[in-house]
Image (cartoon, rainbow, N blue to C red):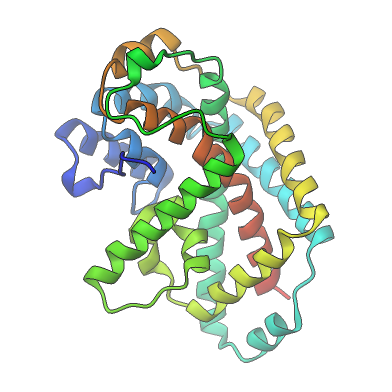
Length: 287
C-alpha cells in the first residue's frame, strides 16, 4: 500500500502551485493530472521534472507523436472492438445535445491520455536504469520489490478506491468503481465530478472489461507500447532525468521510493489502457 498520496493544488507549496499552474496552462486543462500531483509532494523535484518535460509540450514533434499514437490506437480499436447491442440501444435514445457533450469530453480525454502516455513512458525509460539503494530512499517507503504489471494495477485500484472515499465523504454520490477507473488515473478525485453522463460511462466500463479479456486487446496494448518507444524519438527535447540528480533530490525523503514506483511503474503501465479505452468510447459514441 502506498503511503504517498497525491498533493492537491490547495495543499501544495508555493513552488508546486506555480508549476501546477504552468502544467494546466500547457495542457489547456482545468485540473493538474494525478501523475504530477504525486510528484508535487517534492516541490524541488517537480520543478526539475517539469523543466525536463515542458520544452516538448507545445512543439510540433510532440503533437505529431501524440496524433500518431491516437491513429494507431484508433486503427486497433477499429479491428478488435465491436459495440454491443446495449450501446446501440443507449445511443438511439440519447438526445443529440447530450451526445455532443459526451463527444467533447471523450475528445479531451483522448488527447490528454495520449500526451500522458508518451510522457510517462519517456520518464519510465529514463528511470529504468535508476539504482537507488534502500539506504538512500528507504525512509517512509512501502515499496518492496513488487512485480511491475500486477502491482501497478493494484496501485491504480487503490488510488481509485481512495478517490471514491474522498468524494463519497463530501458528496451524496454513488459512483461505479469501473467508471472511476477510467477517470481517476487522469485527474484524481476531481475527475469524478466531470462524469455527467454515468449511464454512458458505466456502459463504457463494461464494454472495456469485456474487451480486455480478449487476446486481440492484449496484443494491441503491447504493440502500442512498442510503437511509443519509437515515437519518443520525435521529441525535440529528449526526456532524460539524471540518476544522480534524482538520487540527490530525493535522498532520504519519506515516500521517495513510493514516488519512484508511481513514476516508473504505476502510471506508464496504465495509460495504454486509458488510450485504448477512450478510442473505444469514441467508436461507441459515433456509431
